[in-house]
Length: 160
Image (spheres, rainbow, N blue to C red):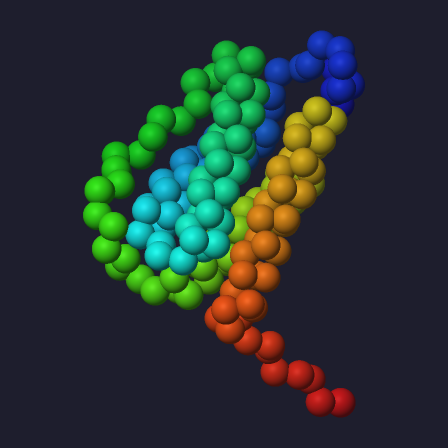
């Protein structure tokens, strides 16, 4: 853990830290493209703005994570081969797109928690915690949109 103070010289990344940072960039590139494609075909203004907010959140996570990799002389992953078409015809309902985003936000939150659990550098833990807070708030906002539209039902209650 030597060299892990927030303001001083940082030690190089270890293999586990490199792995989750690399994965973080890859998954957020996919998330950014997905949010952009969902936004361009969403009809409801609130839903469209939510997807745009998700795209911006992914871009922020990519930038900060890629900067950490570059500071350690590691090339961040490149954009995957797929591109977004110009189509504005929705392949899925807004309800399904919102639910997929809700699930993926939960996976992203889990990834940030996993990253924090296995990092020995305090600066990375702070960054992961900030990203986790932002992802949680984004996911919660999506749940509230789904509830207000009647797209998220209350799960069955436990009878004791």
